[in-house]
Figure (cartoon, rainbow, N blue to C red):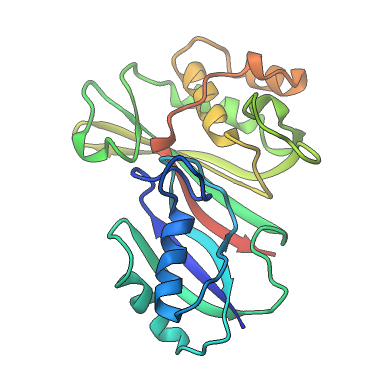
Length: 249
């Protein structure tokens, strides 16, 4: 049988979701917990390969087993075997052919920026701190340019090994500002049918440049039409990025 898990994690101490030789991954950590609970080897497959330092509230992953454990008890049993920065928050049976990465989805990511005179030490692991006051209206104008279907190669990491099309469809994009005691928490929220490597972080880095006044909002459209990664902004730090939702269509 195939079991589908919903997993939340703080990615600060991990090399990313995907198993790697140079560090501890979230995938491998959860897989060890599953193997300890079920008493056999298994492969855990996730929906999104989040990078080192990136967080998630809704990673979806599946594994196969012949051992029947009450589905309602699986999250608690796995959490007893996991570190505090990884939690299994849901479990259900899935069709035998269900693959979390190769089904049509809507994924939502948030990029969080803390904008104030001083960093907020409580948010340092979950935001990117920017000192200079950001122009939210200009950032919103720039963000609107990414809506719809485009070739987003300009917002893809230059060293990525790309397979297939670099076209993606952005279905919604917004910026919310929450007033905090030490400054503003700026939340960039983007929903699309998929994302290229570092795409959200490069978009965020570009929007920060626009918010600082270095570029006009209209320059975002010029970047997309150029298809040139060198025209876009820097890759914003991983700490501000969080996978918040995955919906299967």
